[in-house]
Image (cartoon, rainbow, N blue to C red; front, top):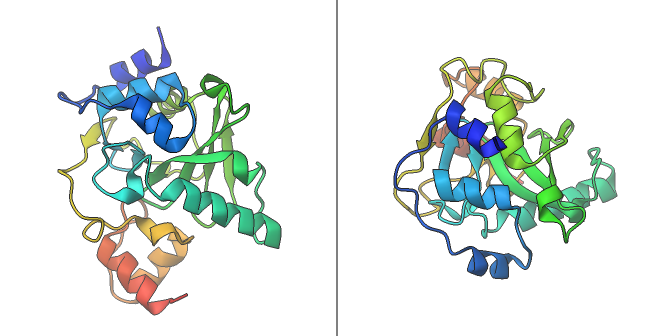
Length: 226
């Protein structure tokens, strides 16, 4: 039984996931991709696990969650600057990191693309939204998801009650414009705890976990330009 089989057993996929032209995707990205991710994306389609964890997909409804969109390069450049300026610890070579997912709290999942020519050996690392904490999983993406959803692994930066409502997958809504569904932070690093504290101090009712509403993120960014 594969990790994807485990994941399907834990969290049944939706029906009718869109077909993906993987040769074109890989040509666009300039690299081969792990086989387990291609199978995962083909079975589940774009969407979120537990309404929290979004895996990048070629058919995602916004460029911010699209595997071929701007986020992998944007985050790689940001991590390179962070490492060069000594702002945050970056335990991996930023040029070897390829963003493959994001949480509603702004934490990012990356492939560690080493060796670059052997994508099926790429491991997963998670970076907290504020940039200070990293967690590395010694296995592929589907193995990581199966381990998290089965409670075999507790990622320190994920909410403790992530599985409080059970395991489920929510498909993305129909494709829309990027302006109507902004990605958390729009590529800018945010500290979700700081956003939540500011929101509560300014009259927004916000729980300790889950999606930070776009209106709150927009208000926070307007109050903290630059």
